[in-house]
Image (cartoon, rainbow, N blue to C red):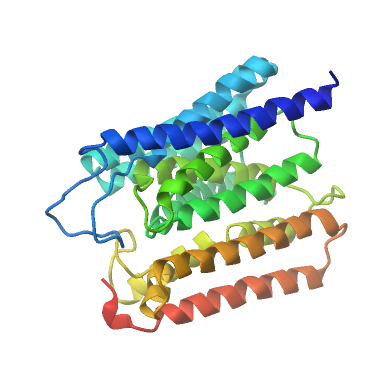
Amino acid sequence: MENSQYIFLVYASFLVSIVFFSLFINAIFLKFATTLGIRDKEGPIIRWSSVSKPALGGISFYIAFLLSTASFSMFFDPNLVFKDYTAIGLMTSTALAFLMGLADDAYDTKPFLKFGIQILCGVVLILTGTVINLFDNDWMNYVLTIVWVVGIMNSINMLDNMDGITTSVSLCIIIICLISSSFQNGFETFEYMAMLGIFGALVGFLFFNWHPSKMFMGDTGSQFLGMFLAYIGIKFLWNGTLYSGSNQAVQQIVQVLIAFIIPIVDTTSVVINRISRKQSPFVGGKDHTTHHLSYLGLSDSQVGFTFVGLSVFSMFISIGIYRFIEEWFWYHSFAFITYFVIVFVILFSITQKNKDKRI
C-alpha cells in the first residue's frame, strides 16, 4: 500500500471512529449525569438557557485529544510526539486548561486562579518553543503569545453562551488550520491528527449542543478548546505563510482577524459595553452579540445559523487568502480589514439596541 493511501485510510477511519465515539460517550454522559456540571440550581442562571443542563461535553473533547495522541503514536512515529517539545507543550497546556475548567465546573473556582492558570498555559507554550513570531524583539513576542492565549481562552469561554455557537465557530477555525496544514503536506504531524480528533469530537457533540441543546460543553470544554485553538492559531495563522511561502506581519494579523472574527468581535463588544457601564468584563451576563440578535426577534436557531453562516463565509475568505494570494499588497490589507471592521460595526451596533435587557 502506498504511503498516501495508508495515511488516507488511517485518518478517514480515525475521524469516523471519533465522531461515533463522541456520539456514544456524550449519550452515556447525558444518561447518567446527575450533578456534575449543574451548579447552583437555586441560584441565578447566567446562561441563556432557562434550565440547567449537564456541562459535560468538554470531557469528550479531552478524551478525543488523548485518543489522537495514542493513535498518532501507534500509526506513525511516536518520537514526533514524546520527543517533540512543541507537542509536549501542547499536551501539558491543554491538560492544565482541562483540569482548571473541570474544577471550575465542579467547584466554581476563583477568577484569579483561572487567570493564573491561563497565563501558565501561555508560559508553557513559550518554554516549549511555540511563540508568535511577529516582532524582532523576543520579549514582545513572548508577551503577545501570553496575551493571545489568555485572550482566546477567555473569548471561547465567553462565546459559549448560546446553543451551538462555540462548537460551530470552533469547527470552522479547525477546518482553516487543517486545510493550511494539508497544503503544506503536513499530514504526518501530531497537530494534524489532534485537529482531526477534536473536529470529530465537536461534530459528535454538536448533535447534543444544537438548539434545543441537551448539554453544554462547560468550562471544561471551553477552556480546553480555547487553549487548543490558541495553539493552532499560533502554528498555522500567526506563524503561517501564504501558499507561495511569503510571509508579512500585516498578513499574519489579517489571517488571525478573519479566522477568529466571531470570538474577537463578540468579546471586544462585550468588554467595551461592560466597561462603559462600569461593570467587570469577567462577570457573566446576557449582553453578548448572540443575545442581542435574539432581542431583535431572532429565534435561537436563527441566531445559530446567522453565526454559522458568518463563520463559514469568513472561513472561505481565510482559505482563499492562504491559497490564492501569492504576494501580499496594501490593497489586500485594506479589503480584508474593511471586511472585519464592517462585521464588527454591524454586530456592535446591534448591541447598542435594547440596552434595558442587558443583565
